[in-house]
Image (cartoon, rainbow, N blue to C red):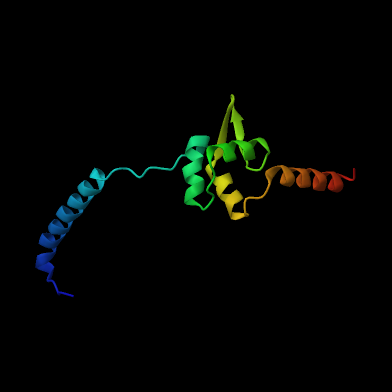
Length: 114
């Protein structure tokens, strides 16, 4: 590390300020990071599933959605899949959601004392 004198400080601070201004300008030119969509439609979900090792066709996705094997919500008549929920579902080994819902309902009934 170089040693500087007190007399050099104003020059050094000026150089540092110029460098910081340059860096700030460069950072402003970078594109803003994009957030991934949190909700996915069926056609967007298929490549997302494939990236995570679940290789389904469109017909398999429709069938499994209808059978309650994958979590989704309806917006109008379209199925919408929540990215975070799907990641949790995949991490849990892709369990049958309708069976999970049934077991949760049974557990709540038992807790309430029938």
